[in-house]
Image 1 (cartoon, rainbow, N blue to C red):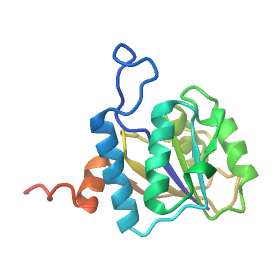
Image 2 (cartoon, rainbow, N blue to C red):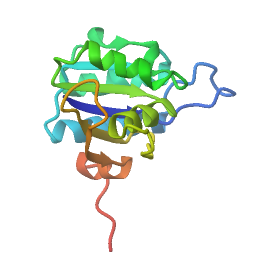
Image 3 (cartoon, rainbow, N blue to C red):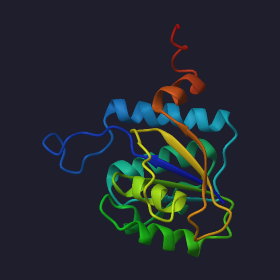
Length: 169
C-alpha cells in the first residue's frame, strides 16, 4: 500500500471562526499541493478525512484534483488530532487491499501514525507541515516496517505545482 499523509492547510483561529475552516492561505496551499500531486501522477483508491472542517476541506481539494469522487471520502474519528494511532492503523487494516490511500488529518495524530508504521517502538519523529505530503510504503497492514518514500514540504509542492520558482542558491 502507498500511504499518503497530509496535514490540513493553514486555518482560521478559533477566535476568528469557531469551526476553523481553511484560511485563504490554507486553501491556496492545498490547491498548490493538489496540483503538484496531479503533476506527479498520484491517484488514490481511498481518501479519508478527520471530521474537522479544515481536514475535510483539505481532503475534498485533493480528491477533486485527483479525480476521486468527493462523496466517497471516508470521514473518520480515527484521524482527529488526539485520536490514538491504533485507530488509524485499524482503519488501514480494514482497507488493506487498497493500493493508494490518502489520510487528511492533524497533529499530533499523523505524526504518531507515521511513527508507529516506521518503528516498533514509535521512536521515529516525522515533522509535518500544513499542506505538506508524506508517502510511506507499507509491505502489509498492520506493520512497523513501512518505508518513508518521500516527504514534500509545502514549498516543494509549490515548486512542483508551478506556484513559485526555485530559490536561488
